[in-house]
Length: 168
Image (cartoon, rainbow, N blue to C red; front, side, top):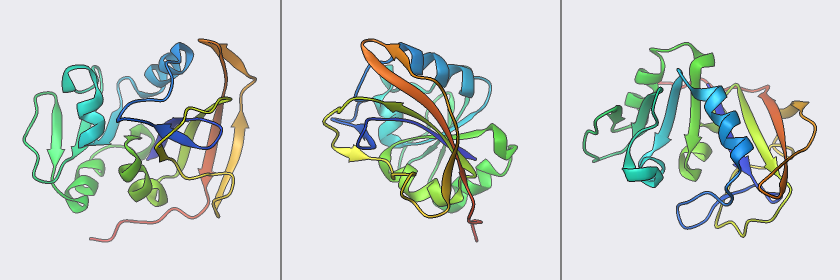
């Protein structure tokens, strides 16, 4: 399992339950990485999508304690249920897509992260872990800068040297 996220230069990821920027190149990258695969999210992330509908052409798993079932996604009530569902798929096919609480909870269990770094300050209210400062995490790949919608971005890949296993 890997996380996939876009961060500003302070590792900010969101404000008012929305993304900080509209970055067409990042959205294309996100689609290319996740289409046909499994995306794992919290309920606020699902509700932030247009119409509160799951992402098309992906298997959507939503951790939503007390939440109702939704067409086009599997709703799980607990971390135990979430890991039981995730275990049905090859690890390299599973992406954690947000929000902040789910990233924080699942990051120790992720083998890696695909991070789009935006060279801008988005005035974030919620943040992702600074993987450059987090023990066990290291960047192993970084693209050349690309400009999209007036903002320079780089696509970076990180590995976690200390992946935790979920114990039921």
